[in-house]
Image 1 (tube, rainbow, N blue to C red):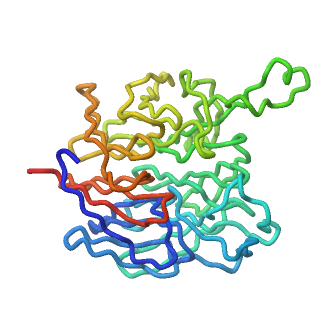
Image 2: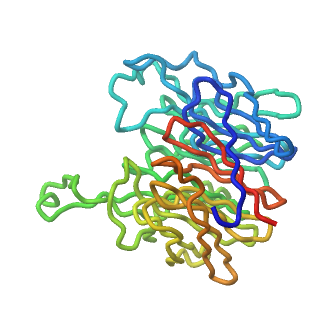
Image 3: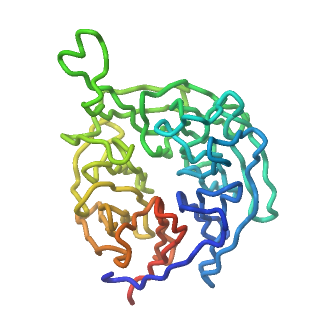
Amino acid sequence: MKGFQVKAIPIPVESAVAVVSFAVGANGMLYVGLTALANTLAEIDPRTDRARDLGALLPQENKSPGPKGPVLDKLHNALVSGPDGKLYLGQGLNIGWRNIDGFDFCRYGGGHLFSYDPKNGRREDLGIPVRANAIHGLAMDPAGKWLCGYSIPDNHFFAFDLAKREALDFGKISDYCCHNFVMTRGLVAYGAWLKVGMSRAASETGAADPKRFPGAHLLKFDAATRTLARTRTRLLFGEEGDFFGNKGIDSWVCTKAGRVFCGTVSAGLLLELDPAKETVRTVGKPAEGPRLSAMAEGPDGAVWGTAGFPKMHLFRYEPDKESITDFGPVVTEHPVCYFHAIAVLPDGTIYVGETDSERPVVYKLTPDR
């Protein structure tokens, strides 16, 4: 890989099959969210590259087994670091609308929202924001006042007021949601809702046409007014398709300068949202292939991301220069290696987390000096 030294750091959790989220702690540690059984959080010390399992943090009493045994938990884009030094975790399930047959949701209470203090290992249960649903994504505003997220299998949007310890369930977003949300300093969250497409014949009966892809539009939550809006702002430009059950918007990032970017699934495009005008423009395509799966801001204001299935590339976008640099595939020895999480430390070191390969590996990318 040009420009970087690559080091693989296996995560020592026996039941783990994927890395699905990152959070950089106030203590400088990198926290790794996993798809695993109960033990879904690990810690990497950047000074030594040592990874350790933080134990069974998620309760199992409200989860019935699936038809083939225990269903794995996950922190699927549901791990954030707060300004109070705590981590916030959303309990998810390794299950979705495509494979829910046999899982007893009548006996499933729902995924819990937790805070976890790395200083002392204390965990606080903040409750279940959406009954009988797992938490599939979380975002927090920079001031640490609100958490927002979405659930599966019913695709509800929820918001959690941390001061009041109050959860607001806004109900079903649409037939599908994006992988995650982003929340700005203005206490506004952005995501996507999908409008089901209809063929001419199907429109006569009002039935959705399964052959047509639902168009992705901007979803907006305003914490000040506690309102959720399905806007008419279209987030996709000619992109069609379903990529292994994923649709629409793949990733979001809000920079310290207040610029909001998102990446698409099927075309792997980088888009920019203008929050004031609620308009979207196409920035470019960082790498060949589908999926722009993860983004994070670097210390100099550049946006780093991963894109291009099946062997994902690392890219850098400099917003002021309108410049995209493709550094090539991170790993070449595997036929498939793609990522679900990225983090950039203050010294410029980058971490990416491998998913859907049954290799729970974090790759440390150190820039050549």
